[in-house]
Length: 289
Image (cartoon, rainbow, N blue to C red; front, side, top):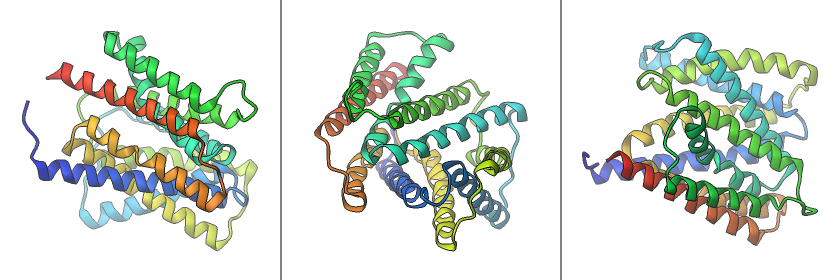
């Protein structure tokens, strides 16, 4: 296996760190705007801003948007991703930011589970251990049966499952697709669909909220492209560890901005989920060498 140069690894880690920071701020903006705009409205304005930013990027840099897959497959994937994003936004309005963040990290575990069920991949002992550890971490975070358990946890899990389905659809795609093409086709589908879904709940945002959602959309596009670039520069096991800075960020932001106490069970459960995902990527990566 070709050894990756250290500068590329550092660049990948920095890009992943930037992606994680943007993701943390995404949740903060949702919290600030949710009292004024319904979550599906936030999804619409966010994606609209992403579409506008991407259009300007394509025009200024002369990207050629390729169609390497049939449009209906892109459309299905885009709608599932739209629903997953909506579920994530509902979750952060109902449960603490740190809890929603910790649950979101389970997405790779659902991908591993789905790969066994639907793609016929081998259910190795390492994969079984990772899944068991990850789901144990989920139980610690959501505390089923406890008074603090909220439907927001179910929304967060639904979002993780939805994004896992998107990842599985990416896995079965023929060859590697250009991230810019994926983002463009995704937004062309999700913006009009989100607008139609938002109409029954329409609330015209204030200029400040519109500004925040525009920043959110531009940041979301940057995060998506940064993630795709980071995956080409560094190993997934390293990047998933870097991405975990989102949890302490969510803990601090939740405490400072929203007065959410730092729960020890979220820290412990999140650490267990991190360990499970790291083990998963380590074993999977070693198996491909």
